[in-house]
Structures are given as C-alpha cells and as structure tokens.
Length: 116
Image (cartoon, rainbow, N blue to C red; front, side, top):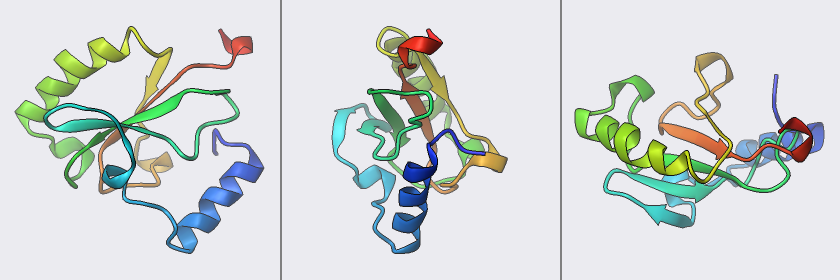
C-alpha cells in the first residue's frame, strides 16, 4: 500500500532503482536542530497532500528504535511541539511500510482540504 498516486509511486520506484535518490540527510535543509533537520519530501503522499510535505530527518544513520536519549529529547520536547503549530499531522512508517530503514525520519504534512 502506498499513500502516493500510482504515477508518483512509479517515479519514486524508478528513481530508487536507478540510484537517483539522495540520502535523506543530504536533501536541502529547511531548518536545522542539533540532531535533526527538516527537509522537503520530493515524493510526497499526494493521495492525501496538495502542498506541504516535509520530513524531520536524523543527521546520522541508525535504526529507528536506537535513538539516543538526547535525540529523543530534542525530537519529543523541541521539534514535535514546534511541528504541532505548523502541520496537520506527522507519520512514522513502521517496518511493513518503511522504504528507508537506515535513516530515522518522520513525515510532516498538511492534509488536502477535503480531508480536514
């Protein structure tokens, strides 16, 4: 299952297959914290989103559930309260739908008007 339209999902699949994707931490930075950065999602969930779909990306590669206490603190007590005033929702893909396993990231986006 995907939250992308078939056309965008196929573009995403082909780009990954051809090695055209950037490492998430190398995407253009919108905003930066000590351990995390905010980047634009080049492959948004366009079934749900018309415009703004960004991601909070950890600046180092690890498994999602091995974050340090400092990384968790910054995420939970600094970044997510900030995101609460800028986006409609956040999404963490778990193993069955996660396409990038080595870089913890959280999707932030605004729903299409018809879903609000």
